[in-house]
Length: 106
Length: 106
Length: 106
Length: 106
Image: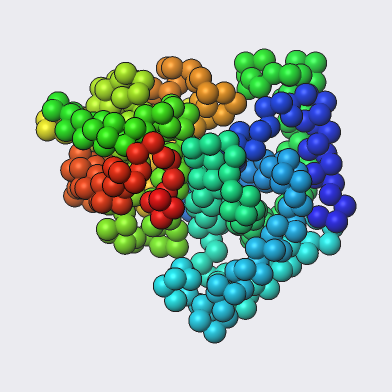
């Protein structure tokens, strides 16, 4: 996130409400899991969820992820890029193409 | 995400492996919940988790979130900004400052 | 659970290891969410999971649920029966038959 | 669960509403994760949750667990007892007493 608009807006939102006191890494990790459950609820009984609800819940998961990264002094986009490097090694193209198996089952 | 480096790298990673066939919105929502559980595991018994594990698991949650947004034709950063507008209305500064209560309890 | 065999075996398992110190209600609630994610992983990419893995993960979710109920001085089976009474009121047979909608959408 | 009161009551509840059609193992696994997130929400910002909400959410997780076990032809209580046997082998008393480490770190 080169211009970090989302992170900066989240920082301002939290700061104005004096909520950083609640945002321990552990509480943020819980919040990510809670919001991930709400996102999953959009798909509880069928593969097609309500679009506005999906947007809202996905935004909530993303927001807490960005806040946790920021709290830990990390850049969300860089985290993804770093992990992709590992995943490329764990899932070589020739072994994993067209397969959903875990790396230790390839 | 102005330059969308993470999204583009994820797209290439998935495309090279022909994995888009597995990435239905429902499967991605499940994946987000699964990875959120793994992130939470870093904090299962204490408030201080292993830093490298946290980075990896947080990256996994973020990656599936970006993939789901992309699959739905949405921009992850814009989603966060749009949701923040709603949250500002639900949590007015004067009512919510210093309180962790849900908006319907303020 | 009239004879409470599972609860008693779990109590003995925890006591022998001196693990009650880790089993705060909050930590048990996190553990339930973590294990629920592992159970879901059995169904991440398809509807048919590995049977032994499903048994193990479902057992883990159940075990932490029974431990949390016990920690709170509650009986797991009674909890289910009490909640069913509420659910019968929220989902009247004539309104909810054959429909997966939430009670506030019926 | 020797008398299986909860399982039988759940079966009747589902049958009266013709809901078995929605209760694929995959949907039940999603439901467990969703309800586990709602239970965790009781502890999102503090260690002390609302007691009635905890009861209700814990009951929901338990109910879907019992339904999944039943759908797979398994007995919930037996699952817990079988898994405990494995856990005793993975966590020998002398190695794990008073420690919250995972078995591969003991």
